[in-house]
Length: 444
Ligand code: NDP
Ligand code: 2IT
Image 1: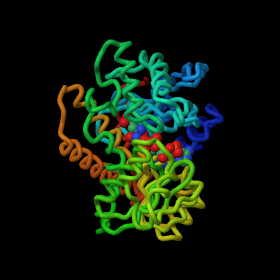
Image 2: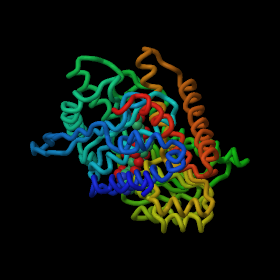
Image 3: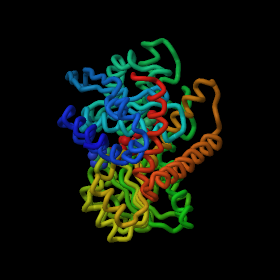
């Protein structure tokens, strides 16, 4: 049996009941086959076996008390996956669906994403099955304090630097940082996505969405095209979706639809982003409210229908497996030309294959959404240097990083005989640096 297949088989046997982890590993390892063929020494060093096994998995109890005095217990996770090229780096997700499989898939993806940024950051991910929806500020604060009371001993500015992800934004990072500082008695860059008044970086809030649009713009440019006049559908209405919408609109696109987990809005005149920001960032309300505020806009219950809206460019920016084979076929039938993943693994394996077979330009998550973590690494650099760059400086660095990622994955795909296959290109370009570092470190 081929090395890649054997490692995948073993991974499934040793980690049963982890479908998201299997899915991410399958996508990654299949793309790496041409690299493995060129480097027989990797098999001798059991490099892939070590690559897919986290260096450390931390699981802990998170007890907290709600406003009525009831006691709740959630699960807490931090998977410190790979530190070959830098300290573990990756977000924290608070969502009721969180389990070990989801954190491991996200951590595995993060290793290669972080490598693609060209910056010195390893891969990690964490979170909790806590549901922030409907909780008061005080409940969120008490939960974050309890979570950090355990997590603090495992992280550090040179060890492991968490950040936000689904359900963890500026408010949560503030509470987490406050508790870390109190216990550890140090004011350091141990979390990124911090507020600007306590060490955060300009552009971090916008970075993932802006970066997604910058890399898509580069793919368009390489084909003599641009965002100007394009119809865009964006799923989600959280941090990534909102700033992807903002930048796409700045570049002349018309964004016609967005969603939250209840349903989607369709505004054929173009989404009014100030209304979305007011609903989502200020009121923390449901996207449905948009259709009550904006004349002519429609609201539809359920998420899947969003992919039936004809568009030139689709930017899935909510969660994993939002686009299955069926939705991909509808998008293709309706003429989609570009799909760029703002969320992590939003397209399932069948969906990816549908897009690639149809000749859709498909930019995978680990490349397309790397702008967030790249700007986190810029935040770390500013913290260590005790200095601050302007918005324009950080934005220019972000743009440059995204353009480089596009060309590196494009070149890797060409070099390894799969031109235009950016899934393979991103996996290969990200993996080579990590593999080289792991080989240099010996069997560890
Ligand atoms: P937010 O919590 O800010 O927003 C998440 C959005 O996705 C919300 O609109 C939410 O709707 C929706 N959503 C979440 N889960 C589901 C679900 N199961 N079904 C339908 N909709 C859902 O998170 P982010 O914007 O930060 O993250 C979005 C995606 O981008 C995630 O995949 C994340 O891993 C990825 N990402 C984030 C980065 C960052 O810097 N924040 C960096 C790189 C990737 P609702 O409010 O109803 O739950
Ligand atoms: O998936 C991701 O890259 C993130 N959620 C951002 C991680 C980070 O450390 O900024």
